[in-house]
Length: 262
Length: 310
Picture (tube, each protein chain N blue to C red):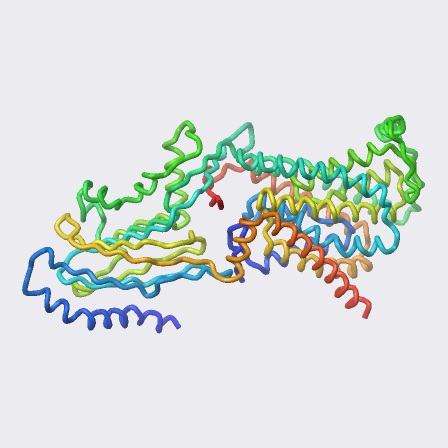
């Protein structure tokens, strides 16, 4: 199983290389920057979250017509999170203080061939939003507590701990200076929705080509139905589930009782 | 075998949840207590958000008490008049509790409150059970002493309730009592159901037997009847208002505890009752201590984060 998996990236690469051969041939005679070509591919365009989902590795690969560095930004839809803080009151550590942070991406990956600060000057990184701290740029909080800096630092730290904000400085690997590949390692708990993947080809401190792709992360079947129902029609769900629990209890009582009498 | 819980929003091992249900069911089958007060702390220990643990605990009790209630109803052990007054109280208390839970959850204090309530309650129940069962094991073999006349607080409360207005006859319980007493008892139990995810039998049963002097079989039937319909309303409200009942979690717990209760009842018939109570007392004290140390030990990370589903 493992061996078979390991060969897959190479297979994909070979296919891409074959597909790209005429293209690179065409691009080679003219060294103008505008002729930089970036071809990208994802092993899949969707991720299905089922009850058994424990994370997924998605192979991402592509080819470039002339040598350069690659930066890949993966961004999920925004989500709202509640941050709570514990403080010591007397001998007890108690929750004290809570803020809601909205409009920040649930997941943000920056994967590149080299550390970003080596590849691009600060102005360029800002322009394309290529820093993890940019996640909080458009974020809103419901209150403005004292020590906002601590809350922000905690947000970034917890996001990193959960594997939601990741900077992979050497995560993208180059092969023969024309082909690149990496894998997006999604953890078990991830936001749903359309993820945007932005690919940047970087040379001499500038972005010379870019491309975007989408990855759909969706909850499937009963899980989706269940959580939608519970959130969209909470009373209906509550009444039906409670009656169901009562019925289940009665049935179990009858079945197990009969079992015991035998 | 990991499954993703749609409301708790986390992965759990389904076998662990079945085991929780089975162990608590086993204990309740052995000793004859509900065990709701063990489910909620166990869920919190594995990282289920406290409000989801409490709401799911109530839903779980609906499933585990349904068949017992039905059996007692058929045997005529339910004092319906008493039960309905209790329910009016517990529905009121339960509804108030659900809104209190929402307010506490919004200010981020719900977890603190649950922890304190459980430490106090489990500590009290555990220690008194421990003392009682140690005494019972020492006295094993000695003839049972006749019940003492109530003294101290019991007698004062007895005189007080006799002087309350609204005295009523409860023929099935063979009792005359002010309706205020079961109403107040119901309110208290309802609040506990909403805030702790317990059925409240551990409060209801002793008060009915020792304070109100109701016949034991009517106590069991009536408290089960009250408990089923209180948890049913509270579970519905927790889903409707707080969206906190996790259907996967509750269903797995119901299945686990149904099986556990069967084993417990069979096993309990063969084991000495005093020693069983001692085991349960030790479990309860251990859970209380674990909850207490949870807020005494300095956490590695003082901040925590949870996704808010809109």
